[in-house]
Length: 389
Image 1 (cartoon, rainbow, N blue to C red):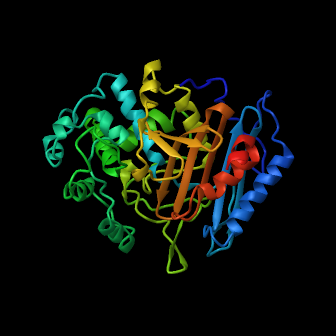
Image 2 (cartoon, helix red, strand yellow):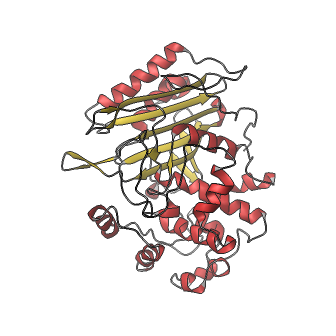
Image 3 (tube, rainbow, N blue to C red):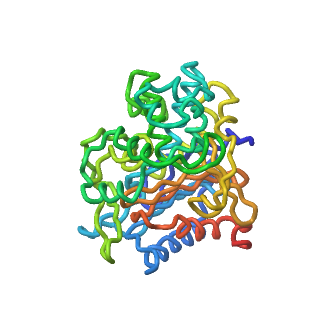
């Protein structure tokens, strides 16, 4: 698959009060389309079936220009209106960040994708899992390791009972190791946060620095993602322009914004704070291959494993690469990126190559279905999707 590099410049424009500068070649976003998108956001937020108090949506296209919108409330207690540049916790969208660092370290010769866990992790870690000598770095990246997910009903209960608890990675590994493997290494596919908990440890062993430091120095800093950060465990601070995240408990929305960032860590959870605009820039640069030294590295990242119907975690999801999800939408429309869910937030960042379009969004309730805002937007923007959906 080939992605165009010429379309990856993120153009900031003045939309809904968001001040930016405009490149000479940037096409102004059609006002009628903008009105339709804003109406769709408001209708989705007001729909009694959605249950999210606030929503964000970002659209960027070489044909259409750039638009960013918001609807609803960022804080129901203070009745604060959601703003287009509000920050949020992005959950498992952390995974492509981790994947990029792993692939960069592979390019540097620190290890290969075919190295087993026993070569890249200490014996005290790898020995917890059967067949660890057969589980490769690649298998961890694309969820074919067979290692069970540490997120179980019991773990969720502990997290919700004490949101501000600081978690140790060993606790996650113990929860995973106590279960039977999903399948022998390389003989199936199943999403597992444990894979990326382990990859965070691979980064730390290879570099001698925390995975947070490596992600910051290799991605956040060079891409100038000014509104993206990785708070350390114990840091529950949030900025003023930060959306609150909610969970529906017995018909009441409970604020779960201040879950400790150690929850899930390198696998996602509350570890990543960002905006829709920063996520769009990140994904565009990744898929342009600009974070890699060798052209073949992007090909490795986009080598997708077919996802069986029985274990698909969302609609239209057909394949998983190295930290990148693949979707096939109605109208035979391809889409690549990653979804994210954590206490209080549901988010996504996708690129549609045939439309040369990037879409990023957030709903401030983890139980929300991304297609509650994604589908109405794509129906407005893409005739092929509208006719088949």
